[in-house]
Image (cartoon, rainbow, N blue to C red; front, side):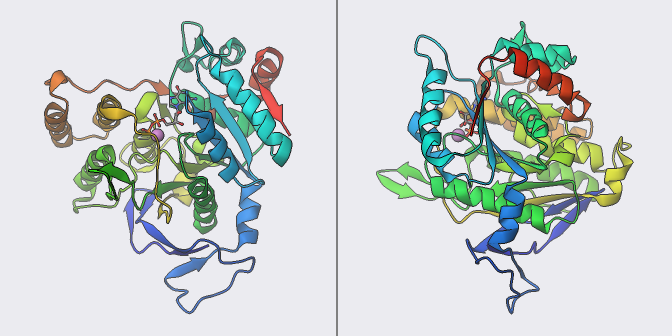
Length: 394
Ligand code: GDP
Ligand code: CO
């Protein structure tokens, strides 16, 4: 892959926020070579990418998506990555989880990938969490609904596999080629990072929509527009300089080095992607005294890399958009580093965009604790014994 080096980097305490980078060529061959423009671009060889892939788990959270889409996503993930599918699909009246399991089994008969599958509502998983005292993920004796909860399960499985990187890809992607590109982008970001604490967020060049029977390619999603703006307001209010650095406030497709993933708190529901950034600024931004001084020395790299492929996924309607909007803004609003001026402005926007809840503060997100605190040996022992849906293919 040949991609642009970050043209600009903004510093927020120990956090390096890199501006969006373009991909120039998807595949630049097996050999690393210096182009004439080596001050502007990085050449990442396919050998280097493969070496990262072998150390990376790709997590696919899925809830009642069409099987064809899930299968397409699996087909786009490079063979060297270990795939973890965490399903929260319904088990009755139709057992969609069983359908997913059957599909993966058939798929894997041909490809022999390493795939781990588990159901989020498996009582055995809840028991494994209870056994280590990780109660923030539980509700009425089971793991709560939500993508973030699925992500936590997957990160712990990734730790069990001793992987160094974890990447996330939604199951509702229509384009397997885009999935493949996301994974290469994750690997490229980790190769560029100067720190073991790094995050790579995908920025979509376009999210195509059908408008008046024509395909239209808008640049920004409806929610990301707003959450990026407030992330940038938050940053500006400390640096004193206007900022447009954040362009991936809601990137569902992103990857984290396990060393960083281990330290973060996660927000339940649709706030998860925005809150990751907020929490990174809280923990390593220097506004609040840092709990992990070692990280402050290495710094944290946040890359935002723009895809060549368009992002085509299921349109889940306006209700979903409103929910995403208030959760993401809630993640910013309730942060201890969010200044009163930004809070006020968030309230104005929410009143405007979701008039039904006028005057009400966004909900306080439920927060899940960092994976680092988990006794992984114990968790896995209970999981292997009790979780009946846990299936390890390949
Ligand atoms: P959007 O793309 O941000 O609009 O959100 P989606 O509704 O498409 O959700 C993102 C991904 O998470 C999709 O692959 C969903 O199937 C999946 N997902 C949604 N809710 C849950 C959940 O409760 N648990 C799990 N494991 N996955 C979920
Ligand atoms: Co989606």
